[in-house]
Image (cartoon, rainbow, N blue to C red):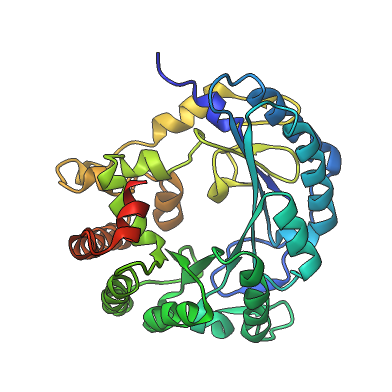
Length: 372
């Protein structure tokens, strides 16, 4: 019998704590409304998760993520909800649980970092490296890099494995490899990267060519920084290598559309993943009414493979049916943009190039990480 998809959904919860943000990023598509999730809504969602994972017989796991806007604008609520959830989840035998927050970092202080350490809260930092100032100003139009750099150093002292979440704006693609070097020099061990998309950005052949040259440089750095017992994770490469080794389909492993987690908006409505929060036609239930399994099936039925992809040898390794990536680039869950297609081909080629060098007995830490 196949795995019940509702089980995964109800043990991986993302709470949109607020739509508000103290940044005004050049690529952001959010409206930054002064909306916050009521405590009773969040508590109902957590109670649902607790009830669900308490019924899992083997290797129960649970994760609660806090999202925004900038989630730490609701810091006191997050502290209350984490404490509430820990009290409930810690009573379930053998349960492994964690919390996750991706923050722009400006509201971090040592007190909250200590709270996170104590309560199994994973903190990821949004930082665009050397493009931070031209792309990520605050609501007053002020540069943010110097302040966020200071917060990064504070964070790394307690969480040396902190992941950087870097978004690449096409106008600043030339800064990618230098930004990765910058993070390495700061002591960062893991960088994730996505391409900015939507109506506020415009990729063209020239900007993608620049990106390609930059990622070629990153691949060489990745090789250099993973030799011997050294270690540096560049997530776009890591995912391609690990999924290939484990024979995992890239979309099944990476796309969470309605199957692996519930996104709960501030008003209590459920959505299939981050990109679709608040979008008309994509709500799949609510904390008061539960999940609408028919709506989920109907939406999933619309997420089909594009005909252009059917004969491609890279299909199992490509995120060509990722609903949010497709919709974000083309407005259609089942239409892959030329940009996404080229980017997938590029990252697969470079990941394989790195793996061919690094999968060697001379690089024990890399092998352990890939095959663990």
